[in-house]
Length: 254
Ligand code: KIV
Image 1 (tube, protein in one colour):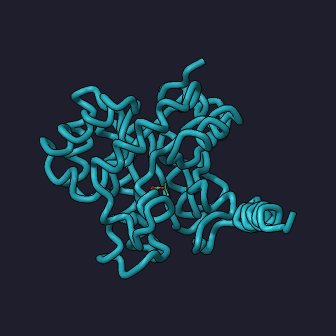
Image 2 (cartoon, protein in one colour):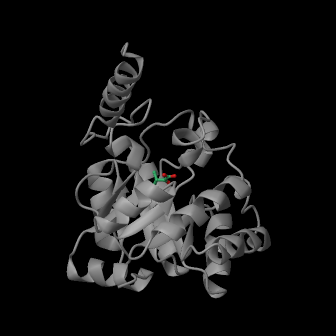
């Protein structure tokens, strides 16, 4: 079965947690898809984990499209969503032109960061033109220079209230889901209770409709880990040991 964003809504309505991970390339994505991940996000975090940039800001539309095509070729079941990179959705028209490229590359929808009025307008514009949109609030890495680093957000009554209002606006204009990143558990819980669309938490506690992580973080491949991630594997060491073993075999005198 090929999942769609409508299945994600059904999962949320049935109280079935949604499992989401990031995807960057073909071979690993095949495994993630076959393991039953519901949503695969071609996240612009690939700027950092796959391309070695310090933030997500430098990644281009072309680079994101290149990764999206590889991911799409690997997936048989999951919903594939692609991040619109920084600077590629400054106006509704620009956002539409960029989003079209991702849907033509095979993604089922796009993700945009932020909840300001201009972003809500962009989400409305895309949804009205047939593009499923996943919204993203809390720690929005494309705003890293304004936020002053990758730090927890919505940690005061006023900022938590602003986040709740933005979440409702994004739902009203038709976002099919909302990523909540690095915010206090109780704020994520309250937003999840207020909304009727699914929330996907990342560093936002256990009360969201589902969870999303950067796959490289989960598998222990990332250079640096956010404070809220507990890797399930130390793939870095496993690969290091495997390569050391290979090197020893190759270098052994015959
Ligand atoms: O780019 C990304 O990987 C993301 C997730 C952290 C949600 O936006």
